[in-house]
Image (cartoon, rainbow over all chains, first blue to last red):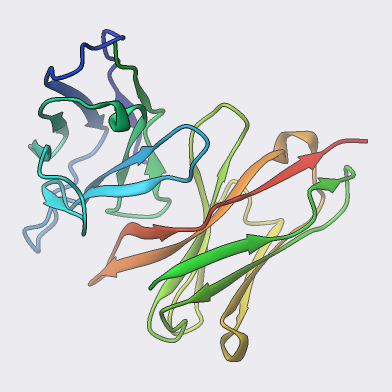
Amino acid sequence: DIVMTQGALPNPVPSGESVSITCRSSKSLLYSDGKTYLNWYLQRPGQSPQLLIYWMSTRASGVSDRFSGSGSGTDFTLKISGVEAEDVGVYYCQQGLEFPLTFGSGTKLEIK
Amino acid sequence: QVQLKESGPGLMQPSETLSLTCTVSGFSLTSNGVGWVRQPLGKGLVWMGTIWAGGSTNYNSAVQSRLSISRDTSKSQVFLKMNSLQPEDTGTYYCARHVRSGTRVSHFDYWGQGVMVTVSS
């Protein structure tokens, strides 16, 4: 199985600051079709996860342009430019290259 | 708009069989896959299995021997059945629309609200 490893944030983060959340995969997620199958989700407290970014850098419908995804085949970053109160929650990365789909353990964001 | 909603019993006994229903609207099960994801209390997300638009299924090997996913397209419902429940099966169960990209398994673009299942004697 592909193992997804996420980094931690120096919580709490001051409102308005920009943060980067890291994720690493145990296998390259770059496929021969040119897409990198890495996705990002946000789970706000008490809510279900919502898709933020798919294929490493494509924002999902309705997602603020403060969120951006980048990376290589195995190292990825979700950047939030100017965190706001509504960004609080746990961020998960997920690989969509092969079965079984696997998620990172999550990165918690708290705001000061 | 796209919606998914899980339903099922909240409390189960060890060794029982869990039956959950995911009722979808705003899209067709014959054009989209639906997956199930479990989240133990206070922990992360674990993919359990998916039923695809054509009716085929894929399961996580960790639960494959106990899990069955089926559907009724006329009712826009997807079903999860898992037998031999144990306390470690306790958690929130989500159904989500599963997007496939060519031959890749890709991502989940819409999620249900989740249903909490507790396995305890």
